[in-house]
Each structure stands twice: as structure tokens, then as C-alpha cells.
Length: 227
Image (tube, rainbow, N blue to C red; front, side, top):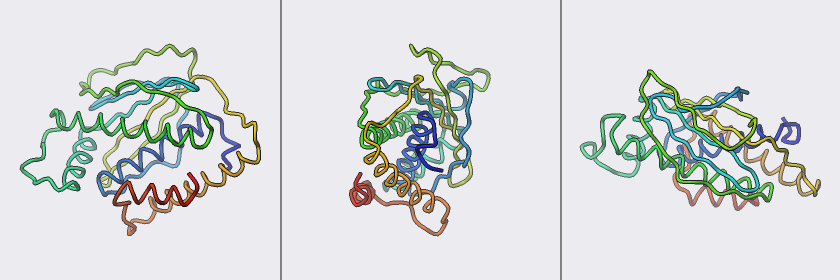
């Protein structure tokens, strides 16, 4: 689907989706997958077992949430630590340990940073974010995060780890539309984004292909594509 045929919230959600995959693939060496369906939902919230959130504001404003099942959070943390070379006895074994919760918070921090960079590169718009927060949540409750946005539009994306454990991205955005003042430049950036999307999707669908091994390799690929 052409980027221009998508609403702004869907284009932004797509950018966040790819940022999540890139960050986790690079830090863990595994291949996370996401559903091909983007969900339009009435609201977003923190849900069990670990929820983390970060607010962003500036040229565009919204709220970004990641909700992890305990299995997904533990798998991502343990694989990331192993990928970094830690010994098994140095790695936490409980999903609600400080090490796991803090690592989940670091993931969302990296994701929001990468997504903001992509949005600025494509649309020339910038935003700042507050300090991400991650908490363990009881199965008995769901927590809502208050924002100053009026009638924000919301989206949800489903992910699976390498072992098929679920985690979810939820986000909202103020009601806004990104309308290009330079159609030719916009078409050029759209073509680049579609190529990047194709590379990411092919990498996700090919189970024999290894995830990028370093941030430097990913940066080099982006440089070659003009991003």
C-alpha cells in the first residue's frame, strides 16, 4: 500500500512498528514478528504483565505504550543478556526482577528515540519525550495513562518473540495530518520508506536470514538508502 493512501496515525504507527522490530532484533539477535494487521482501537492502556510508556510532544504529540507478557519480557531480556555475552548465572530468572523491568524500560527508550529520528528524517517534524517508565502489573488491573490530548486517535499492533510469546504496542496521536508542501520530495521519501519497509518485511519473513548484528550495520544500510 502506498504511504500516501494511509492516514497520518497509520503512517506513524508503521514507523513505530519497524522501530520496535529493529531495536529488539539488534539487541537480542532474534527475529521478532508482527501481525500484518494494524488495529484501530478506542483507547490504550498499560496491561499485564509488564507495561511501559513514554509521552512525546512537540510538532506532534502522543503516547507510546508497550505491554509484555511475562514470558515475552523474560525471553527478550535473557536473549539480550546472552547476546551481550553474560553468563547464565549472571542473568535474572524472574520476570518481575528489577533487571528485567529496567531492561524493558531501556527498550522503549531506544524505540522512541529511533522512531523520532525516522519521523524527522521523513517529515521534517520533531518531538521530545519524557523519561520512559516500566512497571509490573497485576493480572487483576489495567492502568490508563492520562494525557492532555483531546480525542486522540489510537492504534494497536501485535508482536511475537522468537518463541512466539506475545507482546503489544499501543499508541495514540493528537488528531493531525502530515501534508507535504513539497510533493516531489515527499514522493522520493515515500519510495525510500517503501524500500526500507520491504527490506524489513523480507528479513522478518525469511527465517534463515539472521537479524542485524550491530547498530553500525543498520546505520550503514540506512545511509545507503539516503536516510
